[in-house]
Image 1 (spheres, rainbow, N blue to C red):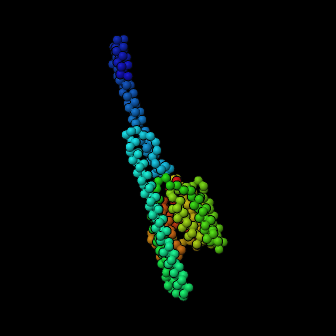
Image 2: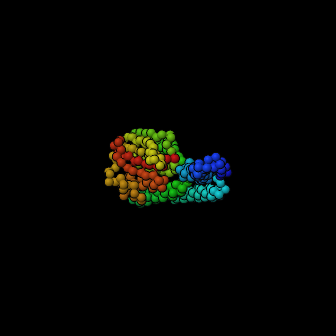
Image 3: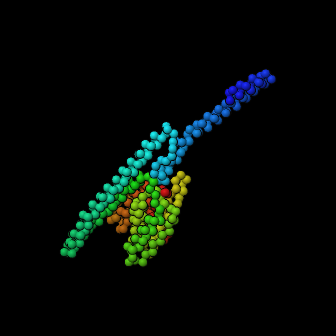
Length: 310
């Protein structure tokens, strides 16, 4: 460009010297703009791998990918390789933590089952007070174990990138189980969940949350429990909203926040409420979601669970 510019300037000076200065300035400005645009294009081309890397990292964070794929310049590729190694190591650590949590739960089940059998034996021998005391302690230990194992599993699962599960599979499976569990009552469990709705998380944790909400609704419902799903687009992130309604007596407004507090036992809050809902709250918060209680259009209680969409 500079050579062409020089040739044109020399030619104009020979033909019309008075135009030379004007042409020289114009060509110089044009050359400056061309160089500027060329530099910006080169800069944009040089930054494009970082744009791709950013998009890949976003996909990993949202659970759509488990590692950072793609080919990158030699200056960036070592960083990508180290990042993928870190993600793989993290997944391995989480898997080991989940296995240990399962081993712990399995190891505690047998002693608790033995204590429960001893309580039954004590009751059969006429020691009713002793049997009741043992049963209460066994129940409390089971609740504590379930509570803390759920927290540990969710803390680990929340760190597991790429986890995704459909709401409909969890909702329908739990509805069938609870229908059998409450077969002695005339109870209609209605599932109105879209097959397209999925959350960013582990199936076991979604089962834990929905299981507690549905079981709580079934305990108090007169004849009907309904679970529905919808999506809420907040602009930056999409959220799945799951509501569980019952037609029972509901819960007074002053107790709705109390039963969601961590560590509140059922007998400290309200009969049939409390501990399971506190587990739901902890799990939801670990996944970046929330749980709230309100009055249901059916007349009972409405539980509104919000979780990041998968």
